[in-house]
Length: 227
Image (tube, rainbow, N blue to C red; front, top):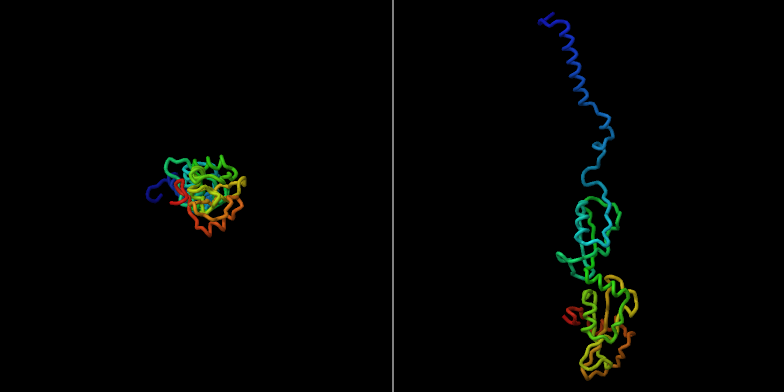
């Protein structure tokens, strides 16, 4: 034998060579798992669909955490203009968009509208519009303070209003009408400086919209009708 290799040893070398070649071939041969496996068919990162969770009734902080864990963007707005949920304040999600269960893409926006604790208490106590005709601005201001950003008022000379006082002579929505969360409220406040010749009767049928346009609109703030 050449090189001094015996016949049995030559067979062993040949066997090992075949085993190595077979092993190398197996490395480059697609396995059964590779054909249609999860690694081959997995969607590229960021293209999978994500179901929007149900957030209504949850605290804003908890809702934000749920949304961000799903790699979605979270935005929040209050029911009143410019409102925000301060740290440590109780704020409940009242509405959301898109609807729960909607499938969205990675980094899609989920927006919620929230109500603060005092606002929620106000609506629980006032499911219908209260009758504030004849109320002073101070008394009515205390009632509407939680939703002050939704209340606007106009002023009108009224002989039926006691001299030196300001009292409500018209309102919208009308007393007893359903009061929806976030609904705008308009009021007409009668004023009497002692020399009024107005025939205002203090009736709730006064045209609120006309009076607001004519007399100028003032936004409610700090329990007063002027800021």
